[in-house]
Image (cartoon, rainbow, N blue to C red; front, side, top):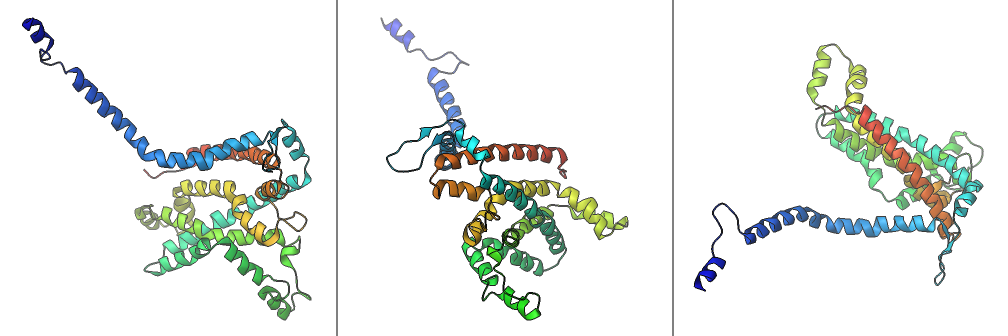
Length: 323
């Protein structure tokens, strides 16, 4: 009996870990694998609640008709929302305006900021940071405040722009700029571009600080002037940031213009200044047709997804990294 007890409680053989030790090691390995995900859990929960859940609801509502009235349920309509969307003249007009804003913002998000970043990067002392701060100030202003300033400047009766033009004799009577189809869309583009220049300038300035100055010194010794250095060195070495800002500008131009359209023109006059984001907003909250708005959102989710993937492939192919 005692021999059986001694055998059952015999220590493990030398060189072989005990079962308890194996379990402890496996538990430690599992904890090390799960630990990073526990740190990410709060962010993942917020993304799931505020991004992916609404996205799934949008997919669902795109095939339903619902007026967002409490107590009512969405009615399945299949592809009817998409069919009516393609026949809607205001939506088709908003697509053209969206392309206009997308193309028109490219100089404000790439060309002008790249030149400003290059010029300020060559400055010495504190003035470099002073100019960069001045460029960035419009970016931190609230869209409502910015809209109020520009509305006063272009006010038809007591605006500064009309007053100056009347004194110079450039116009014979005041112009209601935000109510004129010839001016409204261009002013929305200019205001949005003016506000975005600072953000792009800061991004390009940050990228410029990562370029080795020895390249420019070697180019100068070889006789390359400022323009040649810009096109042969700065632009290629800045290609990752240029393509990144190109992607940002194309994907978010409609979102950036939304606030100014809503505050200054409400999409008018006659829909000349609207875009797809503002049309989606009107379908849902003015017309109380959440399904119609969700169909438009789903359609452009696919379009922007394809554009994003295409630009990502272009970035991988044509970006030059100084490794």
